[in-house]
Image 1 (spheres, rainbow, N blue to C red):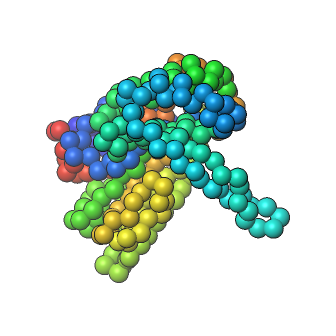
Image 2 (image 1 turned 30 degrees about the vertical axis):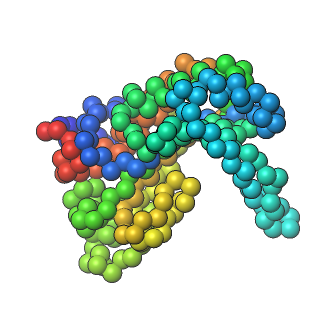
Length: 269
């Protein structure tokens, strides 16, 4: 098992060898491709063609009408309703969201980096073939871990002291909630990592769209890497970027966690 100390700077160091975790506390993984507005999706004209390409893997379709908010001169104003096309597998463990300006893949059943990237490639091919996508504006990849029960009490031996922070102090037993956030720029590769971590109280969440409240306190690690700039789209280029993002996020994760974390959640060695 590779030691944590071998990673000096997780923003530039080479990715470590993966240590599969049989009982990983990973609760959700999300990839999103954002692109210029496609009116054919907004009108629903050829969404059926996209559905046919993915229906074998994602047979359930549940369109959702969503209402957004923008900050204008008169304060917050509602935007026109928009349909989000939600495709999922039968068990609802994998879900695809399609709107006029983005496609997202999310899962609560993450098995491996290779498996997730294969799911993403399948959807990118369908997206390109259906809508002739040739430019993207942003790509993001997000991993969310949640620790509960005794693990929240043992956080000081599971993650680095810088990350454990005040939850490793004499005030530990008095803390109900403590959320930290840092934004890191990736100097050599481009992009950024938004990292959130900390203790959240029972029946609360800091992002209801991706993290459901539960009936007990939990400790969260949320790592979100993204690159926002217009660039040419191709399936192969996007897959190379997705692989790079996943490797960088894993390097950051391995810098954060102690060897005890890996052992406790089923890592070998």
